[in-house]
Length: 424
Image (cartoon, rainbow, N blue to C red):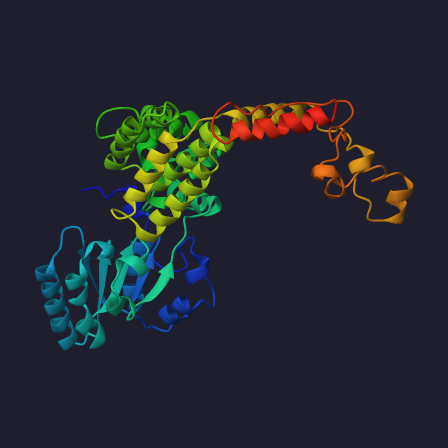
Protein backbone atom coordinates (compact mmCIF):
# COMPACT_ATOMS: atom_id res chain seq x y z
CA UNK A 1 0.00 0.00 0.00
CA UNK A 2 1.27 3.47 -0.92
CA UNK A 3 2.16 5.32 2.29
CA UNK A 4 0.72 8.83 2.75
CA UNK A 5 2.98 11.73 1.83
CA UNK A 6 3.23 12.84 5.47
CA UNK A 7 4.57 9.42 6.45
CA UNK A 8 6.99 9.20 3.51
CA UNK A 9 8.45 12.61 4.32
CA UNK A 10 9.32 11.84 7.94
CA UNK A 11 12.86 13.08 8.68
CA UNK A 12 15.49 10.34 8.71
CA UNK A 13 18.08 12.28 10.70
CA UNK A 14 18.04 15.04 13.26
CA UNK A 15 19.43 17.41 10.62
CA UNK A 16 16.33 16.82 8.46
CA UNK A 17 14.04 17.52 11.40
CA UNK A 18 12.39 20.91 10.87
CA UNK A 19 11.19 23.03 13.76
CA UNK A 20 11.46 22.62 17.56
CA UNK A 21 14.90 24.22 17.60
CA UNK A 22 14.40 24.92 21.31
CA UNK A 23 14.58 21.13 21.82
CA UNK A 24 16.80 19.72 19.08
CA UNK A 25 18.78 22.77 17.98
CA UNK A 26 22.58 22.92 18.28
CA UNK A 27 23.85 22.56 21.86
CA UNK A 28 20.40 21.65 23.21
CA UNK A 29 20.47 18.83 25.81
CA UNK A 30 18.33 16.38 23.84
CA UNK A 31 20.37 16.77 20.68
CA UNK A 32 23.61 16.36 22.61
CA UNK A 33 22.25 13.18 24.19
CA UNK A 34 21.26 11.75 20.81
CA UNK A 35 24.57 12.60 19.19
CA UNK A 36 26.38 10.91 22.07
CA UNK A 37 24.26 7.78 21.64
CA UNK A 38 22.44 8.02 24.97
CA UNK A 39 18.72 8.24 25.67
CA UNK A 40 16.50 8.98 28.64
CA UNK A 41 12.79 8.45 29.23
CA UNK A 42 10.65 11.41 28.32
CA UNK A 43 7.22 12.74 27.41
CA UNK A 44 6.68 14.88 24.30
CA UNK A 45 3.87 17.36 24.84
CA UNK A 46 2.50 19.39 21.95
CA UNK A 47 -0.26 19.90 19.36
CA UNK A 48 -0.91 17.39 16.57
CA UNK A 49 1.48 17.35 13.63
CA UNK A 50 4.43 18.93 15.43
CA UNK A 51 6.79 15.95 15.13
CA UNK A 52 6.29 13.91 18.33
CA UNK A 53 6.21 10.49 16.65
CA UNK A 54 9.01 11.43 14.27
CA UNK A 55 11.23 12.60 17.12
CA UNK A 56 10.61 9.35 19.01
CA UNK A 57 11.66 7.34 15.95
CA UNK A 58 14.79 9.44 15.59
CA UNK A 59 15.69 8.82 19.23
CA UNK A 60 15.49 5.05 18.69
CA UNK A 61 17.55 5.31 15.52
CA UNK A 62 20.32 7.34 17.10
CA UNK A 63 20.81 4.83 19.92
CA UNK A 64 20.34 1.81 17.62
CA UNK A 65 17.41 0.56 19.70
CA UNK A 66 14.30 -1.43 18.84
CA UNK A 67 11.35 0.90 18.26
CA UNK A 68 8.17 -0.49 19.78
CA UNK A 69 4.85 1.33 19.81
CA UNK A 70 1.62 1.34 21.76
CA UNK A 71 -1.47 3.49 21.35
CA UNK A 72 -3.25 4.30 24.59
CA UNK A 73 -6.50 4.47 22.61
CA UNK A 74 -6.49 0.76 21.71
CA UNK A 75 -4.07 -0.86 24.18
CA UNK A 76 -4.44 -2.20 27.71
CA UNK A 77 -2.33 -3.78 30.45
CA UNK A 78 -2.12 -7.04 28.47
CA UNK A 79 -0.49 -5.20 25.57
CA UNK A 80 1.90 -3.46 27.95
CA UNK A 81 2.99 -6.81 29.38
CA UNK A 82 3.57 -8.18 25.90
CA UNK A 83 5.83 -5.33 24.75
CA UNK A 84 7.73 -5.51 28.04
CA UNK A 85 8.36 -9.25 27.54
CA UNK A 86 9.59 -8.57 24.02
CA UNK A 87 11.85 -5.84 25.39
CA UNK A 88 13.31 -8.24 27.97
CA UNK A 89 14.09 -10.79 25.25
CA UNK A 90 15.79 -8.10 23.19
CA UNK A 91 17.69 -6.93 26.27
CA UNK A 92 18.98 -10.47 26.77
CA UNK A 93 20.35 -10.30 23.24
CA UNK A 94 22.08 -7.01 23.96
CA UNK A 95 19.51 -4.74 22.23
CA UNK A 96 17.81 -1.85 23.97
CA UNK A 97 14.14 -0.96 23.39
CA UNK A 98 12.54 2.45 22.97
CA UNK A 99 8.84 2.16 23.73
CA UNK A 100 6.73 4.92 22.19
CA UNK A 101 3.28 5.37 23.73
CA UNK A 102 1.01 7.59 21.67
CA UNK A 103 -1.71 9.58 23.48
CA UNK A 104 -0.30 8.39 26.79
CA UNK A 105 -2.73 10.65 28.65
CA UNK A 106 -5.52 8.19 27.79
CA UNK A 107 -4.01 5.47 30.00
CA UNK A 108 -5.52 5.34 33.49
CA UNK A 109 -3.45 5.36 36.68
CA UNK A 110 -3.03 1.59 36.95
CA UNK A 111 -1.99 1.34 33.30
CA UNK A 112 0.54 4.12 33.77
CA UNK A 113 1.87 2.40 36.91
CA UNK A 114 2.53 -0.76 34.87
CA UNK A 115 5.45 0.99 33.16
CA UNK A 116 7.23 2.10 36.33
CA UNK A 117 9.38 -0.94 37.24
CA UNK A 118 10.47 -1.43 33.63
CA UNK A 119 11.56 2.19 33.31
CA UNK A 120 13.39 1.86 36.61
CA UNK A 121 15.33 -1.28 35.70
CA UNK A 122 16.14 -0.08 32.18
CA UNK A 123 14.11 -2.69 30.33
CA UNK A 124 12.59 0.12 28.26
CA UNK A 125 13.35 3.71 27.48
CA UNK A 126 9.89 5.23 27.66
CA UNK A 127 8.74 7.98 25.30
CA UNK A 128 5.16 9.19 25.73
CA UNK A 129 3.36 11.58 23.39
CA UNK A 130 0.44 13.73 24.47
CA UNK A 131 -1.56 16.74 23.38
CA UNK A 132 -2.69 17.31 26.98
CA UNK A 133 -0.87 18.90 29.89
CA UNK A 134 1.13 16.02 31.42
CA UNK A 135 1.01 17.73 34.82
CA UNK A 136 -2.68 16.88 34.96
CA UNK A 137 -2.87 13.76 32.79
CA UNK A 138 0.08 11.70 34.05
CA UNK A 139 0.36 10.45 37.61
CA UNK A 140 3.18 11.73 39.77
CA UNK A 141 5.05 8.45 39.92
CA UNK A 142 5.34 8.20 36.14
CA UNK A 143 5.91 11.91 35.57
CA UNK A 144 8.77 11.96 38.09
CA UNK A 145 10.63 9.45 35.92
CA UNK A 146 10.21 11.39 32.69
CA UNK A 147 11.68 14.56 31.30
CA UNK A 148 9.02 16.75 29.69
CA UNK A 149 9.73 18.34 26.32
CA UNK A 150 7.21 20.89 25.06
CA UNK A 151 6.74 20.95 21.29
CA UNK A 152 5.23 24.04 19.68
CA UNK A 153 3.00 24.52 16.65
CA UNK A 154 5.27 24.93 13.65
CA UNK A 155 6.01 28.44 12.45
CA UNK A 156 5.01 29.35 8.90
CA UNK A 157 8.62 29.30 7.74
CA UNK A 158 9.00 25.74 8.99
CA UNK A 159 5.80 24.63 7.25
CA UNK A 160 6.94 26.33 4.05
CA UNK A 161 10.23 24.44 4.20
CA UNK A 162 8.42 21.13 4.74
CA UNK A 163 6.18 21.82 1.74
CA UNK A 164 9.19 22.76 -0.39
CA UNK A 165 10.98 19.54 0.57
CA UNK A 166 7.91 17.47 -0.31
CA UNK A 167 7.65 19.09 -3.74
CA UNK A 168 11.33 18.68 -4.60
CA UNK A 169 12.14 15.25 -3.14
CA UNK A 170 12.19 12.79 -6.04
CA UNK A 171 12.55 9.69 -3.88
CA UNK A 172 9.96 10.16 -1.15
CA UNK A 173 7.99 13.22 -2.16
CA UNK A 174 6.35 14.69 -5.24
CA UNK A 175 9.53 15.85 -6.96
CA UNK A 176 9.22 13.45 -9.88
CA UNK A 177 5.87 15.00 -10.81
CA UNK A 178 7.32 18.47 -11.44
CA UNK A 179 4.60 20.23 -9.43
CA UNK A 180 4.92 23.78 -8.18
CA UNK A 181 3.11 25.64 -5.42
CA UNK A 182 2.26 29.28 -6.09
CA UNK A 183 3.51 31.72 -3.45
CA UNK A 184 0.02 32.76 -2.37
CA UNK A 185 -1.05 29.10 -2.25
CA UNK A 186 1.93 28.25 -0.05
CA UNK A 187 1.11 31.20 2.22
CA UNK A 188 -2.53 30.13 2.49
CA UNK A 189 -1.64 26.49 3.16
CA UNK A 190 0.89 27.38 5.84
CA UNK A 191 -1.80 29.45 7.59
CA UNK A 192 -4.76 27.09 7.30
CA UNK A 193 -2.81 24.06 8.56
CA UNK A 194 -2.48 25.69 11.98
CA UNK A 195 1.16 24.71 12.50
CA UNK A 196 0.35 21.03 11.82
CA UNK A 197 2.87 19.59 9.33
CA UNK A 198 0.89 16.39 8.84
CA UNK A 199 -2.22 18.36 7.95
CA UNK A 200 -0.27 20.59 5.55
CA UNK A 201 1.24 17.60 3.74
CA UNK A 202 -2.09 15.79 3.63
CA UNK A 203 -3.79 18.78 2.00
CA UNK A 204 -0.90 19.16 -0.44
CA UNK A 205 -1.19 15.49 -1.36
CA UNK A 206 -4.95 15.69 -1.94
CA UNK A 207 -4.53 18.83 -4.06
CA UNK A 208 -1.75 17.19 -6.08
CA UNK A 209 -3.99 14.23 -6.89
CA UNK A 210 -6.41 16.59 -8.64
CA UNK A 211 -3.90 18.03 -11.14
CA UNK A 212 -1.63 16.79 -13.88
CA UNK A 213 2.15 16.49 -13.61
CA UNK A 214 3.98 19.78 -14.16
CA UNK A 215 1.04 21.86 -12.91
CA UNK A 216 1.22 24.82 -10.57
CA UNK A 217 -1.08 24.55 -7.59
CA UNK A 218 -2.77 27.92 -7.08
CA UNK A 219 -4.51 29.24 -4.02
CA UNK A 220 -7.94 28.21 -5.28
CA UNK A 221 -6.83 24.59 -5.54
CA UNK A 222 -5.59 24.65 -1.93
CA UNK A 223 -8.65 26.56 -0.76
CA UNK A 224 -10.90 23.91 -2.28
CA UNK A 225 -9.08 21.15 -0.43
CA UNK A 226 -9.11 23.09 2.83
CA UNK A 227 -12.83 23.80 2.39
CA UNK A 228 -13.58 20.14 1.91
CA UNK A 229 -11.69 19.31 5.06
CA UNK A 230 -13.63 21.84 7.14
CA UNK A 231 -16.98 20.63 5.78
CA UNK A 232 -16.18 16.99 6.52
CA UNK A 233 -15.35 17.90 10.13
CA UNK A 234 -19.02 17.86 11.08
CA UNK A 235 -20.08 14.26 11.56
CA UNK A 236 -23.74 15.33 11.54
CA UNK A 237 -23.48 16.57 7.96
CA UNK A 238 -23.93 20.30 8.59
CA UNK A 239 -21.40 22.86 7.46
CA UNK A 240 -18.90 23.85 10.13
CA UNK A 241 -19.47 27.58 9.86
CA UNK A 242 -23.23 27.14 9.94
CA UNK A 243 -22.84 25.50 13.34
CA UNK A 244 -20.64 28.22 14.82
CA UNK A 245 -23.11 30.76 13.44
CA UNK A 246 -25.95 28.89 15.15
CA UNK A 247 -24.06 28.92 18.45
CA UNK A 248 -23.27 32.64 18.18
CA UNK A 249 -26.82 33.60 17.28
CA UNK A 250 -28.30 31.41 20.03
CA UNK A 251 -26.19 33.28 22.58
CA UNK A 252 -27.09 36.63 21.05
CA UNK A 253 -30.75 35.59 21.18
CA UNK A 254 -30.47 34.80 24.92
CA UNK A 255 -31.30 31.11 24.48
CA UNK A 256 -28.89 29.16 26.73
CA UNK A 257 -30.47 25.82 25.87
CA UNK A 258 -29.95 26.14 22.12
CA UNK A 259 -26.47 27.54 22.74
CA UNK A 260 -25.55 24.47 24.80
CA UNK A 261 -26.90 22.18 22.07
CA UNK A 262 -24.81 23.77 19.31
CA UNK A 263 -21.75 23.90 21.54
CA UNK A 264 -22.02 20.17 22.19
CA UNK A 265 -22.73 19.43 18.53
CA UNK A 266 -19.42 21.02 17.62
CA UNK A 267 -17.41 19.40 20.40
CA UNK A 268 -18.87 15.97 19.63
CA UNK A 269 -18.04 16.53 15.96
CA UNK A 270 -14.38 17.02 16.81
CA UNK A 271 -14.11 20.82 16.99
CA UNK A 272 -11.02 22.11 18.75
CA UNK A 273 -12.26 23.48 22.13
CA UNK A 274 -9.75 26.33 21.84
CA UNK A 275 -11.46 27.47 18.64
CA UNK A 276 -14.78 27.58 20.51
CA UNK A 277 -13.25 29.53 23.37
CA UNK A 278 -11.79 32.13 21.00
CA UNK A 279 -15.23 32.63 19.52
CA UNK A 280 -16.87 32.87 22.95
CA UNK A 281 -14.40 35.56 24.03
CA UNK A 282 -15.34 37.47 20.89
CA UNK A 283 -19.04 37.07 21.70
CA UNK A 284 -18.44 38.41 25.22
CA UNK A 285 -17.17 41.69 23.76
CA UNK A 286 -19.30 41.88 20.62
CA UNK A 287 -22.75 41.03 21.96
CA UNK A 288 -22.55 41.74 25.70
CA UNK A 289 -19.81 44.28 26.17
CA UNK A 290 -20.32 46.70 29.03
CA UNK A 291 -23.89 45.63 29.63
CA UNK A 292 -22.26 42.97 31.80
CA UNK A 293 -18.44 43.24 31.92
CA UNK A 294 -18.31 40.01 33.92
CA UNK A 295 -18.97 38.13 30.68
CA UNK A 296 -15.44 38.66 29.38
CA UNK A 297 -13.82 37.72 32.69
CA UNK A 298 -15.95 34.59 33.09
CA UNK A 299 -15.18 33.48 29.55
CA UNK A 300 -11.43 33.97 30.01
CA UNK A 301 -11.63 32.10 33.33
CA UNK A 302 -13.46 29.24 31.59
CA UNK A 303 -10.71 29.07 28.95
CA UNK A 304 -8.04 28.95 31.65
CA UNK A 305 -9.96 26.28 33.53
CA UNK A 306 -10.23 24.15 30.41
CA UNK A 307 -6.51 24.50 29.74
CA UNK A 308 -5.78 23.35 33.28
CA UNK A 309 -8.21 20.42 33.34
CA UNK A 310 -8.50 19.34 29.73
CA UNK A 311 -11.41 17.21 28.56
CA UNK A 312 -13.80 15.99 29.88
CA UNK A 313 -13.43 17.78 33.24
CA UNK A 314 -12.83 21.16 31.65
CA UNK A 315 -15.77 20.85 29.25
CA UNK A 316 -18.15 21.99 31.98
CA UNK A 317 -16.29 25.29 32.29
CA UNK A 318 -17.03 25.91 28.61
CA UNK A 319 -20.68 25.10 29.28
CA UNK A 320 -20.76 27.53 32.20
CA UNK A 321 -19.42 30.32 30.00
CA UNK A 322 -21.95 29.54 27.25
CA UNK A 323 -24.88 29.67 29.68
CA UNK A 324 -23.68 32.93 31.25
CA UNK A 325 -23.17 34.62 27.89
CA UNK A 326 -26.60 33.56 26.68
CA UNK A 327 -28.28 34.70 29.91
CA UNK A 328 -26.46 38.05 30.28
CA UNK A 329 -27.79 41.46 29.28
CA UNK A 330 -26.87 42.21 25.68
CA UNK A 331 -25.24 45.23 24.09
CA UNK A 332 -23.33 45.71 20.87
CA UNK A 333 -22.56 49.34 21.71
CA UNK A 334 -18.81 48.73 22.10
CA UNK A 335 -18.77 46.70 18.86
CA UNK A 336 -20.53 49.48 16.96
CA UNK A 337 -18.35 52.19 18.56
CA UNK A 338 -15.17 50.33 17.65
CA UNK A 339 -16.24 50.00 14.02
CA UNK A 340 -17.14 53.68 13.73
CA UNK A 341 -13.92 54.83 15.38
CA UNK A 342 -11.89 52.48 13.20
CA UNK A 343 -13.47 53.92 10.07
CA UNK A 344 -12.65 57.50 11.11
CA UNK A 345 -9.09 56.50 12.06
CA UNK A 346 -8.61 55.08 8.57
CA UNK A 347 -10.16 58.09 6.88
CA UNK A 348 -8.06 60.58 8.87
CA UNK A 349 -4.76 58.83 9.57
CA UNK A 350 -2.81 62.11 9.61
CA UNK A 351 -5.09 64.23 11.81
CA UNK A 352 -2.92 66.13 14.27
CA UNK A 353 -3.11 65.66 18.01
CA UNK A 354 -4.53 68.86 19.57
CA UNK A 355 -1.73 70.94 21.07
CA UNK A 356 -3.19 71.05 24.58
CA UNK A 357 -3.15 67.23 24.98
CA UNK A 358 0.29 66.65 23.48
CA UNK A 359 3.13 65.48 25.69
CA UNK A 360 5.78 68.07 26.59
CA UNK A 361 8.89 66.18 27.78
CA UNK A 362 11.36 68.83 26.57
CA UNK A 363 11.74 72.60 26.82
CA UNK A 364 11.34 72.93 23.06
CA UNK A 365 8.00 71.13 23.13
CA UNK A 366 6.80 73.51 25.84
CA UNK A 367 7.97 76.52 23.82
CA UNK A 368 5.88 75.50 20.83
CA UNK A 369 2.81 75.14 23.05
CA UNK A 370 2.60 71.40 23.71
CA UNK A 371 0.45 70.79 26.75
CA UNK A 372 -0.48 74.46 27.09
CA UNK A 373 -3.97 74.91 28.46
CA UNK A 374 -4.40 71.29 29.44
CA UNK A 375 -6.55 70.84 32.51
CA UNK A 376 -5.65 67.92 34.79
CA UNK A 377 -8.94 66.12 35.43
CA UNK A 378 -8.02 64.96 38.93
CA UNK A 379 -7.68 68.58 40.01
CA UNK A 380 -11.10 69.52 38.65
CA UNK A 381 -14.41 69.35 40.41
CA UNK A 382 -15.82 65.81 40.31
CA UNK A 383 -12.58 64.70 38.61
CA UNK A 384 -13.76 65.96 35.22
CA UNK A 385 -12.44 68.86 33.16
CA UNK A 386 -15.76 70.07 31.75
CA UNK A 387 -15.59 71.38 28.19
CA UNK A 388 -12.07 70.12 27.42
CA UNK A 389 -11.74 68.61 23.92
CA UNK A 390 -9.73 65.57 22.82
CA UNK A 391 -10.46 64.97 19.13
CA UNK A 392 -8.39 66.36 16.24
CA UNK A 393 -9.81 69.73 15.23
CA UNK A 394 -10.85 68.63 11.75
CA UNK A 395 -12.99 65.80 13.14
CA UNK A 396 -14.97 67.85 15.62
CA UNK A 397 -16.65 66.15 18.56
CA UNK A 398 -17.64 62.60 17.64
CA UNK A 399 -19.88 60.20 19.50
CA UNK A 400 -19.20 56.54 18.74
CA UNK A 401 -20.26 54.88 21.95
CA UNK A 402 -23.98 54.88 22.66
CA UNK A 403 -24.77 52.66 25.66
CA UNK A 404 -28.01 50.69 25.52
CA UNK A 405 -30.74 50.73 28.13
CA UNK A 406 -29.75 47.31 29.51
CA UNK A 407 -27.53 46.03 32.29
CA UNK A 408 -24.64 48.13 33.54
CA UNK A 409 -24.80 50.32 30.45
CA UNK A 410 -27.87 52.01 31.97
CA UNK A 411 -25.57 53.47 34.64
CA UNK A 412 -22.81 54.18 32.13
CA UNK A 413 -25.25 56.09 29.91
CA UNK A 414 -26.47 58.15 32.86
CA UNK A 415 -22.92 59.12 33.83
CA UNK A 416 -21.88 60.05 30.31
CA UNK A 417 -25.04 62.12 29.85
CA UNK A 418 -24.34 63.95 33.10
CA UNK A 419 -20.78 64.73 32.07
CA UNK A 420 -21.83 65.93 28.64
CA UNK A 421 -24.52 68.19 30.15
CA UNK A 422 -21.92 69.81 32.39
CA UNK A 423 -19.82 70.63 29.32
CA UNK A 424 -22.55 72.62 27.61
